[in-house]
Image 1 (cartoon, helix red, strand yellow):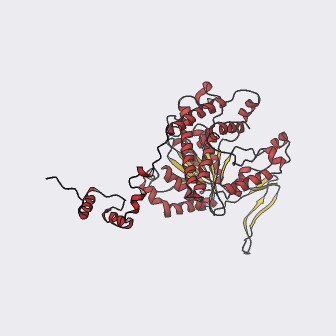
Image 2: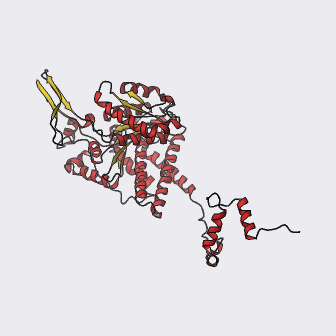
Image 3: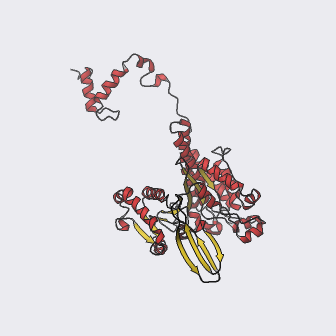
Length: 469
């Protein structure tokens, strides 16, 4: 909840002076709201996200059995993130390190991570059982003969049986997203599995390698991004990956993994890089028409200790960096979706340019506030700013930077007589003949005539100036 208050404050001071937010849709995904609506609010939020395509999400709670009692809930509602991943055809959860020029964090250069957004333990079915036999049977949709995937005899009197699957249809899409991002950010890609023991994970590696070899290997070689990995895409066993994350503090690499491994490894990246506040979290899915749906949130979850201090009337010092990166990511994606839909609309193009400039300027203001020693206490120690003072300081710096970009006096509007060739004169000329003549001497086809061709043209026309005798 404290983060909700901070979000409200920074939107009021950083966003609303520059944008009309009246059309933004919001949904209360607190445990109480989900309980009061029998989770209809979550269903509405998922539907809205599918329609809009750009989502900013604050951290939510998936209530435990104890929290169900403490909050007086009807039941232990499921993970809202899981519902979103299913509802938006989740492909990957991208988690990247955040860097501030001039401030040394855990990794010197950027680290990227793609976590497969579906499958694995998170969607598992399970039950506690006694002695007996467990059969896992597959029944083909096409009417083929069923067969037993696994049969095991349970001899213990107390067992927990778990069944889950890894859907692989969208791994090719994950591969394209991952390799394109690695090329864009100039980092070396690695694929992480435990396939030596978990044989079923071989398909993930095989698909990623196939896409890499077919489409991306040459580009990575040309960019010199495979020098550190022996000239090819490398596979890392998940155990080895945990060690390399500690050792490779120069950064400059990317990893892609299954859902659970990705969850664990990105938490480790966050800790190496100072805190979860310095890593992004971006769910990428796809709508029915193929448009990318992107949901952005801070990766660090809820901040219960700060909320309790806030309730007690104590000063708090909340670092909103991850939260702001999520908000700016959603705004940027929304502007891009609008531009994709209306590429020739002048107003849309202007807004797209304004959003990109604004987000860049806000990042600069935010980062510089940290660099000038005016950050929150997690960065600057006990003398750091409170939540409210930090937000106010960034707002002041943002407004100053934006004002510096605005010309003090608007450029003059040119009238027809100020133009090189007024419209009245153009009417007297054979414009088609003029164009033909110009193109004849525009040898480069760039809309320009060099001195040599300009001289030839004047000689041909008999108007070349001659020396005075």
